[in-house]
Image (cartoon, rainbow, N blue to C red; front, side, top):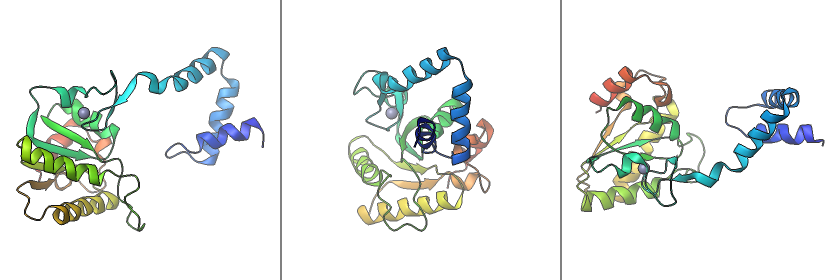
Length: 204
Ligand SMILES: [Zn+2]
């Protein structure tokens, strides 16, 4: 295997990128000027040097080690509500709307409908313990499940509800879903402010 194949293989691991697209990336880089290539390589190498993960919501952001993100660290944040979303891009979309004043929690993925071992990439255990802790010590009253309104998102919504009920039978925390305010097929990441606004207001 030559270096062209090797690099293409690395690109093929990107989400949503197939073999053909990964080859196009390689040819693009071959034709690009040296400065672009070395700048790209440098940025990739140093990516984790200043980017940390918020210990409270798991979002990646630029900050000091062990510091919390601007949403979680905000002294005015509404501790009664917690919005559970799938990924970093959803966090940015919600933050941009300025319509949700509580903390968020990045679930880390969606639960596959067919696969049996679902616990690999998702933070269900972390979520359950955060809900228990915050309901007892910080006055958390409501958890809003903000997964995309796709079959997998709906499946994840159901899964989280079941796991929460199993882990804490008489929980006083209210569980609602953002999905009911969105139309079928909607992904949080691509929703505009107005759509997210009505979804947040109509959570059930
Ligand atoms: Zn955070």
